[in-house]
Length: 244
Image 1 (cartoon, rainbow, N blue to C red):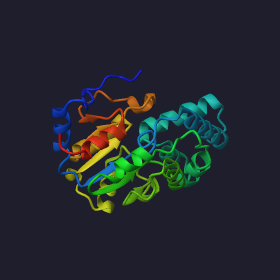
Image 2 (image 1 turned 90 degrees about the vertical axis):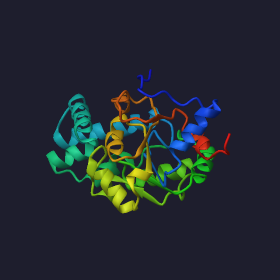
Image 3 (image 1 turned 135 degrees about the vertical axis):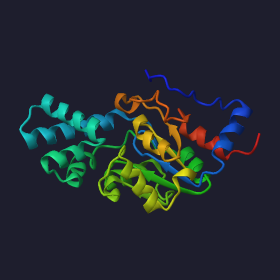
Image 4 (image 1 turned 30 degrees about the vertical axis):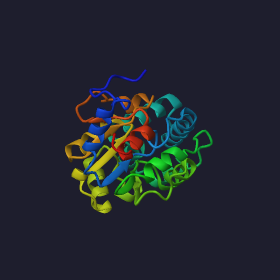
């Protein structure tokens, strides 16, 4: 069950709610999207395999049993926002090699192409960006699988942002600097609620895309969430629809 949020999803059956939503986004020039569990639905099979790969990697590297390796993996994720970041800081692990080994070859067949989402994204005014903690190869594979590659002005992976992961402020600052957009005229879509804290502080419009991931749900009742989009495609379609 998803936890409660401060902000209820808009009633998109209500013309007044649709008009208010469009008005709130009227000045947005940059649309920034997380990738995993945001631009495609949470896919348990994919993440079960990726998690198992990370646990085995850590266990082999540090001589830990699976339970201890899994706990360390989750501790680093919680503390640094990215397991690879903790491994780099504490154990000198190359984060690129770690991400390539554990994520780049997981099966993605359970992720479905989404032509409706592609159409909704293409209709947005301004420029589109991806900002993900993923490795470049993983991002490329998933964007192609969903059918939305080619729609984005830039795809910022953690490797493109000096290995600064979300939720670190520097990650968001680098994305804005290198993407050439003003955060005050940008919108951030995320399934990890705590990753919206800094975008909110920077003046971005923040949209929480709920997923069943317990880790992503942490902080979903916080004040950093301005909008909730359980159905991302419909939310985007509403923003570009003809006036009611």
